[in-house]
Length: 207
Image (cartoon, rainbow, N blue to C red; front, top):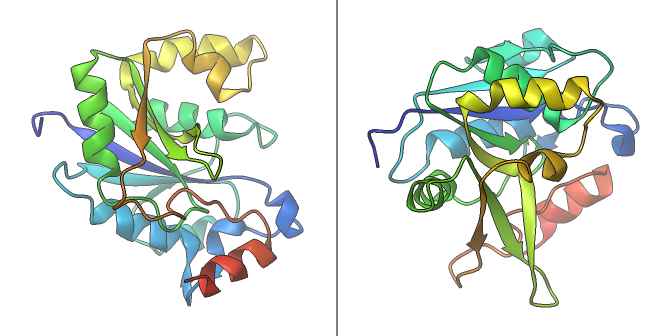
């Protein structure tokens, strides 16, 4: 599967509303900015290395640029959510596939790319979405952890022009495979996203 070229996209363009409006991607996790954690985990991915990594951010662009990768603001106005980041990434992506990850889940699996790519290829899908095991035993899709074909750009443009904002409503229009990350070796907090400063501190101190 290594013949597939993939660009990684870190989504750091949100309002950070539940953190009081601060730029979430620049908040420290164990002394290192969250977005840098995401960048390092993408660079450490097993089996299927990424061709490049980009960041979508709407504030403090110079701080993100200091991380050494390309940084782009949303191409749509008004903090339109994760799909705006998807759209910006697809417009800039020069590889066959694009992987998205949020900036606020610093412990996502190091085999994320490998497993999503395997699911996409084996099912001849357009999109592969990660799913994590919940405490009640069920699997919950994590739609911001998404591997997609860049040929979906036109579809996403039309969806958003029609007012669409929900990721799952867009992915449902395509062949989408849900890839479970539920084996014993998966870190229980792998897909935990820190929406508040308190949650971020709790994630730092939890075993």
